[in-house]
Amino acid sequence: MAVAIAYASALDAREWTAFRALFGANVTIDYSAIGSLKADVSSDEWTARCRLLEAFGATAHRLSNLQASVEGKQAEVAAIVDAAHFIRDGEDELMGNLIGRYRFRLQRGERWSIVGVTLSVAGYPAGRAAFDRVFALARTRFAQGASA
Image (cartoon, rainbow, N blue to C red; front, side):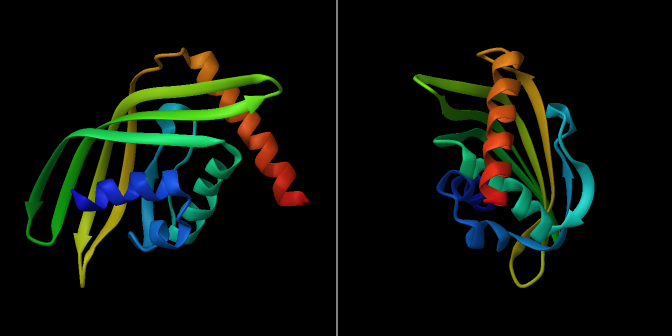
């Protein structure tokens, strides 16, 4: 369960070295529930993609109802996630949030490493349009920062 908490904490703190250290060389990502990536990618690529969160003023990925199952060198951790993303647009502070479930697949070597992450969505408390709007704004700002 500590790995799931470390995942959410590193995202919110923008601690990319600590975030990357949670994975082996590659990871299977399924964020298709929010119209994002569903693929096997290098962990470096996944870390780089998550840096989009730098465009937000703040994020809060709160986990609850954690459950873990271990079978030998394989484990799965499931958690409810309440993920809030805040960004300013002129005078307005916007929030896009979702409530859903993370499912982490772990493999044990010298340590437990994340080999898969799936995000499913239960709902969007502020509405899907608000969620999509803040992410579109963040993508634009991140691209502008990356090209500057």
